[in-house]
Image 1: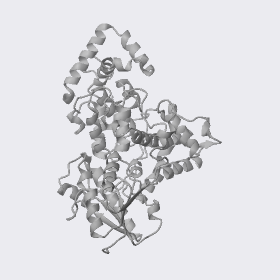
Image 2 (image 1 turned 45 degrees about the vertical axis):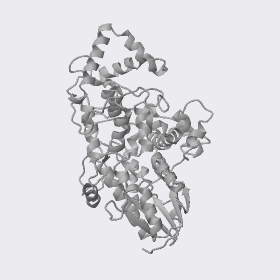
Image 3 (image 1 turned 90 degrees about the vertical axis):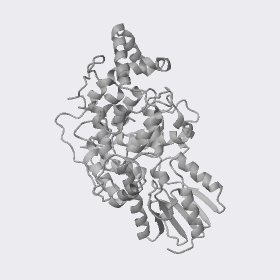
Image 4 (image 1 turned 180 degrees about the vertical axis):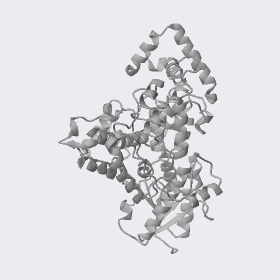
Length: 514
C-alpha cells in the first residue's frame, strides 16, 4: 500500500453496497477504509452470531474491493494501531497517508450521524457526504409526505410509494383491485403442515469469533463458529433471495403471522441482515419477488407477494422515515412511565411460559425471530409487564442479526411498547393467551392454562392483559380501537375483576419465577 492518497472514504459495517456509485470506476488516489472498532462492539450486548456476521461480511466486502482493483484498508479489532473509534482511526490515517479530503456515506444510525458530523466540523481538510443509494426514499421523504396530513398512517404512505415506484399497480390502481391483502394473511399452520428446510450456509467465522473472544467483548446467544448459517456476502444473499422466491413466497403471506415450536423460520425470507448491511437492495428484492410471482400466477396468489412487498416498501421505509423524523427525542419516550427491569429469563429462555421459552431460545440459537414473535410474544409480554423501554431496546438491539437502531427502536419503543404514545401505532399491540393460541401451537403442553385468568396456573398473559388496560385506563379509554376492551372489562363481575388484578399483582411480583 502506497504512502500517499488524495481521498479517504469510510465504509461503515452496514454500507456493504458494491453497486454504490463510489465503485463505478477505480481511482488510485482514493483509499477506502472499513474498520472493526470497540465503540461498535461494546455499545450493546450483541448476539455472537450478529457480531461474527458483521465482521465476516465486512471482510468479504473488503476482499471483493481489493480483487476489483480498489485500494482498501481493513482495520481489524486486534490490529496494533487500531484506536477503537472511527474518529481516532480516521485522524491517524489522514496523517499517515497525507489525505486531502475525507468522504463518507450517510449513516443510518443517529449516533453515528452525529459522531461523523462533529468529527468533520473540526477537520482541517475538505470533507463531503453522499447518500448510501440504497433505500427507496430519502431520509426526509416521509416527514415531507406527512407535512400537511393528520397522523402518520403507514398505509397512506405505502400506497403512495406503490404509485410512485410503479410497484404492483396499473395506471395507479392496485394489482388485484386491493391495496392490502392483510386480512388473508393471518392463518395458523395446520397440524398436517410439512416444514420447509430453510437454506442455511456454513460460513467458517472462527477468526472473527476468536477476535471477539480475545478482546473480551460481551456477547449473548449461541454459535458454532465453523457453521454460521447467515449470508456474509452478496452472492450468498442472492442465493437466499432465489430460495425464498422459489420455496417460500408461494405461502409467505398466508402464514406470515404463524408461529410453531418445530419451525423457526416458516416461510420468511430471512433477508433482513443482507438488506440492512446493504449487500442487496430493497428494489432488487421486491423486483425479484414480483417477477417470480408474475411467472407463476397460477400457483402463487397475489396476497403472498403483496404482503412481502408491504414489509419492505411499506414498513421498512416507513420506520426509517419515522426514525429520522423523531430522533433523538424518540429514544427517550416512555408514554406509560414503565420502570420495571427485564426478567432474567429474557437472556436465557429459562421460563415455563412455552411461547416465551420457545421464542427466546430460538432467538438465542439463531439470532432471529420473525415479526409476530417479536411483537406479540416477547414485546407483548414486556409491555404488559411494564418493562422500562430502555431495557427492551437494549435487548432487541443486541439479540437479533438484523438489529440496527433505525429499524429496531421504531419497532420496539414505538410499535411494540407504545412508548411513543401513538406516533407509529394507533393503539398498543397487546394480546392475551387467546391470540397466541390462535396463531401458534405454543399453548399446547404449556404449564399454564390459556383459558384461565385468575387461578394459580392461569396464563400470565391473561391477567396482565386486563391489568395493563385497567392500570392505564386514563390514557387509553378514549382510544376508539380499545372501546370494546373497556366495555368487556366493565361488564365483568366485580369479584372476577378483583381476582384478575390480584393474580396480575402476584405475576408482576414474581416475574423471574415464571
